[in-house]
Length: 128
Image (cartoon, rainbow, N blue to C red; front, side):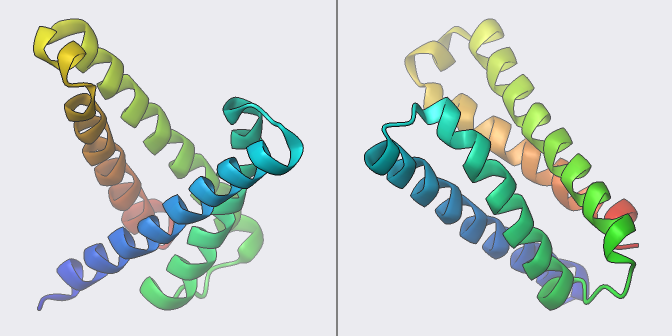
């Protein structure tokens, strides 16, 4: 399998780990500390970003870049991906009436675009 596909599949798998981290923190923070999902997200998002950065850095891109330079770049790219995801989701719900009945389709479209943004910019900007 070509290196790009292998790297992409690892990126997806590591993203799945990040999702599991976020889901766990949101669930546990709500249960243990009665935090709202949005309040819990202020804990879960940075935790997942840190974990996925470390995993991608070590196991996927094998980066030797400066931690001080690379960390903020990765976080910025993750925010860009999250905003792209949300933007596509909102656009789908606003423009395609079927998506209001099937919002998971909009969620999938947003997640796909967010993943593409994150992978592209991680490959050419973060772990260059």
